[in-house]
Image (cartoon, rainbow, N blue to C red):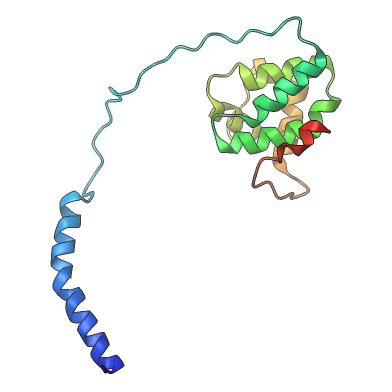
Length: 159
């Protein structure tokens, strides 16, 4: 049976003998120096149809649609922020507030814009300023320090 010192010595010798080979492999594929300029030639510009307000939609259908759209965002941060905001305020919003919220979450083509406006990292364009944006900005400040790590469970949809 080998002593612990003998085992450590053996392991060190084996690891040291392999290190140049492993290092050589990694350095051949590893990153060195400055990143090359990105020409963005691989990006495809996909035009999105302009947002149009839905007409003929009942208030209850609009609330349920907005609740779903608040949860299913293009980025996790907005999914969490907007779904918790919608859970708290959607059922008490007036028809005018629902239209503002609908426009706010569906007209901008970049979800990061909504996030930056809500967190006040960027100024909100005048078109989206209003009562709902003010509510969202205040909600985002999380003055009660609630734990907001995940979107709410879907069980509340049936209540």
